[in-house]
Image (cartoon, rainbow, N blue to C red; front, side):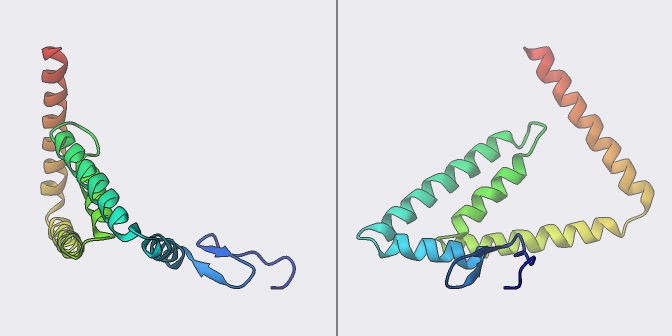
Length: 133
């Protein structure tokens, strides 16, 4: 590599080769799987953490905050080890994308009115939550 040149942030440079982040994590997973009992341990850890994230996200969905983002993060973690989670995540991404594009094609009054209604509902939910304390 010429002097003064830098590697892009998405790569990790080693003495032998430059690898991307994705292949770096695949290499780590394959190394863990090569240990005796490593594949089962990885599957259990990913399953427990992914399920915990999904459950925590579902508990947070009615509250203002990143409930659905946490659910999708848990599903993405499960997709590392489980094919059914990969298929479900792919379908969820497609449905969210279709819904976003459909909503984006609606009249501006409907889009902004829906946003205002959602903000009012969230504010009412927060007010009820504070009142119940």
